Image 1 (cartoon, rainbow, N blue to C red):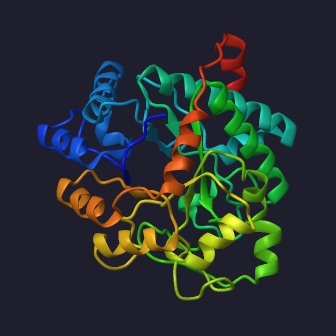
Image 2 (image 1 turned 180 degrees about the vertical axis):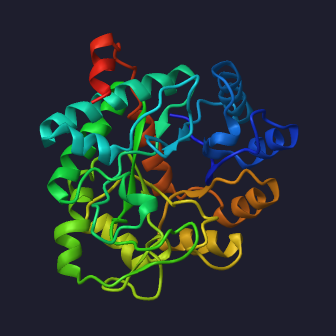
Length: 330
């Protein structure tokens, strides 16, 4: 299994790969790429872009996107289906079993749309448990307010993606539900005791610890490490590995988010030193990507093994029929 050398995932500036980006990616050799709305115009354009990104590194690099449905979906009408927020779909279903079937079908449809344009990894499911104080930026993206419901529906989401030939990336370890702030703008501190975190927020991620890839959360958990956000905390990364039991490829959330402090080089270095495998930089700014690539360096041997295992989990998609597409509407 051929993988990139660099311990990074990068975005690009726009809908067409630029020559200086192409040269940088060839040299930096990132593990993969991530796309945003700025990169997406039409199916034909997107197929060209994903092909060009892979050609730049000379291999079948994974290409990620955030396509949850609701507010967080980068591929939108008129070329792609629009979806209700996940929590709306779950609550409308009336039972966990019906909600799980609907969300699994949704991800089969989303996965088919992604594969058709060369995208083969989706930053979903969410294992975050909605709490009374969960910030609105996250709340209706969640699947429920108890860990058992969240785990069941998150498993269904992951299975739907895998059946569509798309790698699931579970987020946000070890749980974002207690965040009362938007981590794009500020760093929240979670003061809940460790017993409560284990019983509620960590529990869905224990149930999903066999998934191939995961993304960290930029939150301080005072009961575990009061001085550092989870993404940059060696203590928390050990807990994710040893107690939650996640052994797959662990990537950071976007290093540009204002929950993190210091220069991008500093943010990246602290993240890698904590034990995260892959530094995620989403903005598509070339100078920033150069700084992140230098600070992240090459994947460690352990990270490279996990990267190979994650890519080996990519499978051929199962056929999608009209009845499944109807079920996806909930």
